[in-house]
Amino acid sequence: MNRQKLACLGLVLSIFSVMSSVYAQTPTVYPRLDARIATPLESEASVTETNAGALPLRTLAAPTATWVQSTGPETANPFAFLRRGQRLFQGNFGGLWFSDDNGDNWTRQINNGLLIGRGVTALAASNTTLFLGTNFGGTGGGVYRSTNEGQTWTAINNGFPAPRSIQDFLVNGVNVFAITFNGELFRSTDNGDNWTRINNGLPSAVSVGLGGGFTITNNAILLRNGAENPAAIYRSTDNGANWTKLDLQLPASVLLLNLVANSSKTFLGTTQGLLSSIDGGQSWQSVSGLPTPGSGQGLAPYLSGTTVYVSLVSFSDPNGESTTYISTDNGLTWAQKSKVPFSQIYEILVEGPTVFFGTPNGVVRTNDSGASYEIKNKGLRAAFTWSDVVVLGNRIYVSSHGGGLWLTTDHGATWKQLKNGLPYYAFVSAVRAVGNTLYAALEQPFGFYHSTDFGETWTPLGKGLPSADFTSFPTVLTNNDGKLYLGFDNKGLWVSSDNGENFAQVAGGLPNNAWVWSLAFKDNAIFVATNGTSLFRSTDGGVSFSTSNTGLPALFTRGLLATGNFLFLTTGSGVFRSADNGTTWTPSLTNAFYNTIARSGSAIYVAS
Image (cartoon, rainbow, N blue to C red):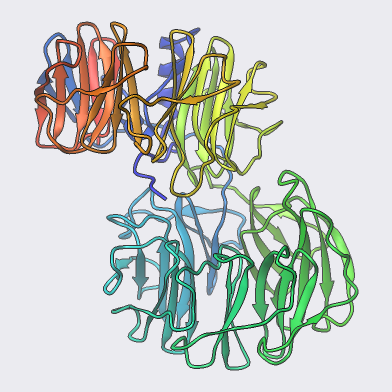
């Protein structure tokens, strides 16, 4: 997943009071959030000003004490837990967090070698060495190692073709395994100094997902591969050098969920029921005493020694509840516990009667083997990458990747999650207000929605739009002249003339697979900046596009701003300005990579 355009919102909230007073009644959408920490505050000491013609062009360095931490939203999608003594680590889209009071309070680790904005999806330990995997495979991503209990981290990616996003780790003696989101399995035998891909007997792509699909049992390693259809289990008895596909004798329609093991038994959750094996996965039996999953449901197991917990989870109702069952005799008999406030599980950490769940609601904890549950999100104010901000009167809407859509009406003092019609774990890529109507584009689960009651309820729209996935997602949503424009990563630009009911792809010279980074409208022309080397312009309402690159470098066209007589464009080589509606361009601020540009009053601000 590419997340360069996203940054954490948890820093701001004095800024929101500035936004609301300046734009009190006008629906306002701010550019991609990596620039939003560079919103104009005249007390900033670190402002660099250059001559940009009619307006000064300013860049901001580190924010000063003018910035105030908001009180929320407090939530997360925890993808990894790791216990080290009293300290409990948690990885989520906001990075690495820790708690020293068993999850009651959480603090984000910063200034420790990990870059802010890199989500953490995998954690593991091998004796005194900790391993961490991010969900960002570019610069600053991949695998990290700590030898001082997580105080500092160092990237260790030698042997990977490039830094990879990491799904999961498995440690077996001196062998450390890492599965990437690219579908590759790597192994290190020297504490992470070097990595080698191992795939003898495996298909070209493997995926264990999040929540448990990689385990050790009876001197064998089992890997649940969800990257093939139907999903399969692979077994290795030589530390991953060779793999054999197991015959589960299940219908192709059955989905495989968690795969977990203790010293004597392996459990596999499926959408048909729970399976167990006592011979390292070579043969499997159905486990009795549990309900048969209905349509859109499955059984997900997790373990604490010979105590087995199973959750009846729902895929069809992600906003609903699930039921937990417990066995204290390694799966021979079962007792129903209670309804729990989540229907999907990303990660589990079992410590006797205390169990931590990573869920769409954040961290959920039980201290009594599932008799009761508590949501434990205190301190998780920046646990997501926040993607868009819209100000509508006194309402401030914030969208997130993995945390859904949030609303504050008191400048961030309190927050409300908007989920009536929206899945609350959604990846909301873009939000737009047109009059009093709100529009939201979701990456996962993909969808396009609108609300006519200030976000209280949402209705799906967007017929004709392409589906989104981890390699292609909505990037920008805007409106002009009665039309809605929705840009995608790798799937070009789409337009609606009927308030989002139907969309059609914009062709006519604009590549179908373009990564649309930003749009601008000026003097009846439409400008589209892509993540490639070209800026596109249309002078016939989007019927046809042609490049508008005269004077521009061949390096990343990013943020667009139309203001007064000028058009500004940020690129990988600086900021450029056009005084002739994009026909020619001249440099305005050079020798720096800027992503985003915005105007406030008499100044223009850019940020990298």
